Image (cartoon, rainbow, N blue to C red; front, side):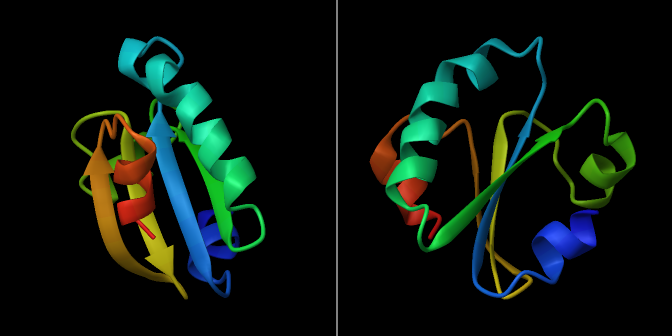
Length: 93
């Protein structure tokens, strides 16, 4: 599913690695929703539960959450740990 949702998606994708128990993840959720709404035409936002996808998290070196990884045409172009502003999210794209 990760391959089809992210790696094979033409264009820009921002992947949010989060966990339900993670306070910072909950703190940025409204910001991430605003970002997803604002850039809905040009950026796909995918949320991945880091606990449920431990192997993938390890494979991608996601050491802290929330970690957001930005892809363009299936290639990683940027990442951020706990971005706290819309500007920080925009830097991903």
